[in-house]
Image (cartoon, rainbow, N blue to C red; front, side, top):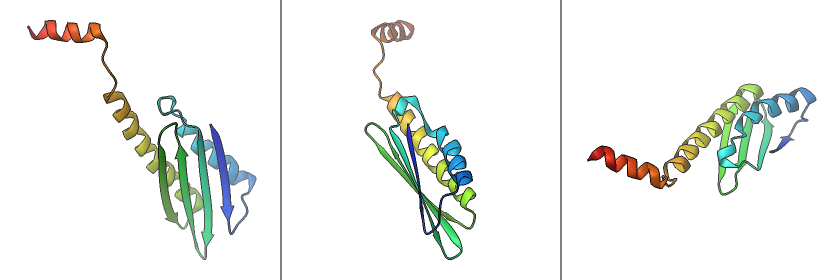
Length: 111
């Protein structure tokens, strides 16, 4: 998984880069086949805005959060995208076909 961290109106320090990579590493979910995560952090007057775009094999998940603390905004945006990932993962798992042996066993239990 490729993680891109970009700063607008301020420079990304090594501490911010490390924190962002550690927080965003949680989003590497094998079932979704995550290809890349783009984090854009911008600073306006007295608050920060964090935009996350998670590119999966066949889906794109997005989240935007504004806060006065950069780290809190990053955590909140990650939580939003993680919730979207869990919903998508459940949706993918619900639509999987059941094995033939499982359907025969289920029908036998009903009779």
